Image (cartoon, rainbow, N blue to C red; front, side):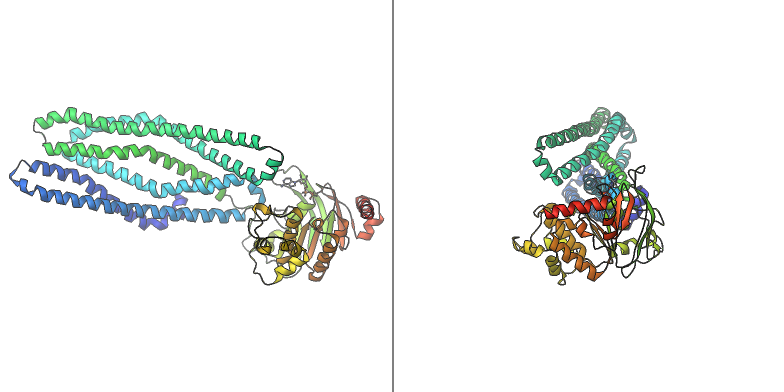
Length: 573
Ligand code: ADP
């Protein structure tokens, strides 16, 4: 996204607000720079027979002053409102974009970094879209109108008094360049701090149990001090730029007194005009001092736009086709036709090698194998959390990559190994936006959570804390199973989650699945969870090393038979 697409997409629709604000600013600047001339006129009139009109002139000047206050206030409202509206829209767009991204995206942009883009970078764009534009136009108009009025009084003095101001801009040039570099650095440093704070908070239990508080604090201090150093440096530079420009305006006054006073004495212009010139120069001081702030606002916004484009421009890695196929309306046939897969961030390591298998509608496939053999990866590919090679996964004889992704996600219920619970109530975590139509109670009973709920302070309405910290590991896992089963689905993917329930609960869950008959894939370490499956795959190193029914696999030597014997021995002891 560059400035022109930003303007077209976000700012153009507020053109009428900006236009009205612009006219309000022209009116204020024009009237404000006219007032000194009226004062000059009044002063000069004091020495003439029209001196009795001076009080009326004063009333007129006061009324114009009130006009300036009112219209200046209106101009602020007219500029700040679109700034706020643009900010809200940008944030909504960024958030909806984030929700479409695949998991690989988060590895490039950790959460703290995304938060700092959503808050400080968007905030900087708002500052430019509201205050920045207002201040820029205001400065340009004030300098313009003051210049015109000064030239009207004396072109010679106007040229002479502008010399210190031009010199000040030249001196500031290198400071402004340093300022820009610092601003860029500070934005990256803010992101690093947010990320450190967020990850420390998420892993608080680990930090405390390893007594690693000191190391985390030290790292925080290091990041914070780096930011502090850049921030102090930036304030220093701003503190130089502003006063140099302010000083230049004051030097112009000295130039005026030095060159202008003799001219006034010679009667080249009146005492009133001299006073008017003085106050016009005074009007330049504050816009010129504000220039340094304006420059940093503009640069911050430019960096902000660049950082936002980085996360908003890349198309989510899920090519939604122009005319996707609809997802199946009942339990489908799932087929893996020689799927091989490597994660996008480690393309040289093939995690799945040439896997072939078919699961008929409503049937169950069990998957077993040592840790790291690719079981979870296989489920992630079917859930299409990652893009797999075209033609490697087929759903009712349609290539999965051709199926409407949002519809597919609605049909598939995944219960991952690592459950994520939101810091809401247990009920909200299980329903996850679904209506509470009585199935919640059934799911609680099925996962035996109904017993646990009785000991929670507010039952099913109890908050579960950040990431479900107030529940035990087993309770979290069962809440995830309840969530997965409650969602209407035709395909069910269970990633080693049945180990969290006892054998009786496991048996009743499996019986329920048999009744509902979704096409099911169950990854398990415990054979009891998959022995009922129509077919079982044994994975090792990403390859299928054996497959068959429970009875077939038990009858031949290998990983499955060994595991079965080992688990039976354990059960008997
Ligand atoms: P299993 O579920 O059988 O324990 P996984 O499917 O989780 O195995 O992992 C298979 C292999 O893929 C492992 O070597 C693991 O290190 C690697 N892996 C898992 N997730 C990722 C990822 N997001 N990026 C890169 N490699 C990964």
